[in-house]
Image 1 (tube, rainbow, N blue to C red):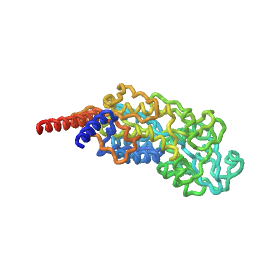
Image 2 (cartoon, rainbow, N blue to C red):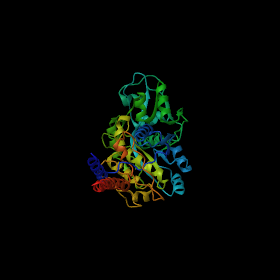
Image 3 (cartoon, one colour):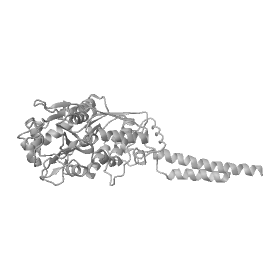
Image 4 (spheres, rainbow, N blue to C red):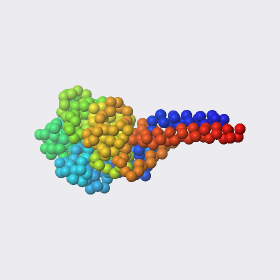
Length: 430
């Protein structure tokens, strides 16, 4: 029996030597904070819950609007920001002055759906020109001839209540850019993150605020991410695209639109709202995380592990929540950008990336390992694994392969020492 126990100990140690490290380099006692865009809020909430359940790590994110999120990052009151549009030139300079540099990481795709609440209207089609006239205050009743022309029949005689974002919003920025690109003659305000309210438009804070207002108002119309309409069972406009099709904001139509966008050198996208490519929902976009390239080591470990999950298996949660996963080329570009966060630490990870160049994009959708923290006086102890971890999340951090190997070696040597000691005692007794 004793001999069997000894052999089992030796074998366990040898097995541990050959087993991939199971612990992510995350730190349960360190919370990473973010704030910004409400467009991706429902998706981020799901990712946060999944990640916390598996790792015990808290990612705090508050939906305050893209503009407020960027302002908080510039002020240093959060660790990262969410934004549906790139930062303005002045903000870019402020971020570089404060942090040295930062990266844009596209994290999810989605549709800005035009949501409505019109009694007895279950299918509504609108062209870009008609939308521009509704949102600029020119069309004020649902029985307007322009609406009838888009749909083949007139709507009810009911005043239109237009709800818009009252806060500085990336969603407003994308929606107004779409209006400007589609019908500059009628939409003269251009692309703006602060929606004009000089023609009776009613401002509400956040995507939640707009969607809730539309839900409560007979004759209401507004814009928010598709998932907010799904949650409230609101009607969604089929928007006419550049190919002449009226398209709903479904996953395939969003993916087609993002595929038609151009990836810029800084990681942002140039969206093509008027592409003649068939199958597109034209008011589609992505949301970005803005993250400094130099962060506290422990926070960087946690955030990188979270991002690797979100950009890996986390994309599989998108469709059920009304979002669209990033197209593969864009997802790989985002994963490469993650490698620029604390690049010195990334060099020390099991699969190092050359610094300061971005880490190479993975060739599969498998979640890649997060970088280890920068060298310090002593390495942080890996967080204990949860009782029932999700392997897809638990493997996202940079595991300490050296520590695991040493533990296996120690266990193996210990088993051998026990065996030799017992043999020596047996010889003495004889």
